[in-house]
Image 1 (cartoon, one colour):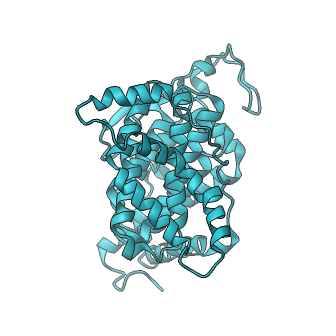
Image 2: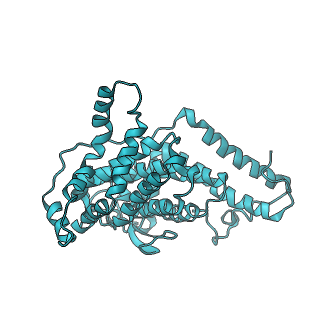
Length: 387
């Protein structure tokens, strides 16, 4: 069944071009997920720019004295992908667009759990100018790729909180943030970033959940998203000093928690009710489960709220926060995050994606439309590139 009733409608054909361009995400996902060699190539500098550099044939080891180790540019593909994604995140009009958004998050998830790509996207020697649409802290900056990915996540959250159909994407966004955080901590990588952008996004989701519980309480992923939110904030509290270049970025998180303490307490209450404490289950066992598996992620947040609960408003809060962060230590261990694997039960996503592509190709064929206008780069023009 074709997606349009009037095949001759030129606007529909133009939409075909647009959607078929986005369909390259499916190929890109498959390459990133299954092809380790492609991932190595994706982040490799252009070899022709370094003709005298010694190259390992498998691209897995580059000598320290190689000019490639000093390369300051990343393959254009990844930058263009992030830039294109930022536009799509702000232009979600129908369920077809949601398919593409999910595919973008799958690609980002794969990139952020592969050690090869993680070592590259967090490498301070590999920077890239990337235009992120609606980015608040500057439209185009020369930064490492992980910074652009976090900016992209912030743009998505800030522009799509009122869309319930994207609820699963909030979970994917939080998972990507966590994967980057775990890697930075494990590798003890100094990371220069304006973390306030991520803090604001996290507390935007918390505020959204607490204010819209009636419409969200039946969402299957609600408990998981609350767990991910608190786990992410607590992980930064516990380990932020390891990878943050400036302590003022850490202090900003403490300030956000203080300013949003009522929302945090409401979130904990919501999470408790979602577990069904009022049911006839064994309350002792249920409470033990909550303490061990759920509330452990709230503990660092609770500790901050409790410490500043009765602070003297006449005193400088900035100084109080600094004194607190200089001395505080959290002896709480956060479990490793989940690894993404294709779920056979979610084949429907890939089936729908392929059907969508086929339907638009069929429409173009029936309308005798040339692909020359769709991909000018295939006919020799360099003015248009997918990414």
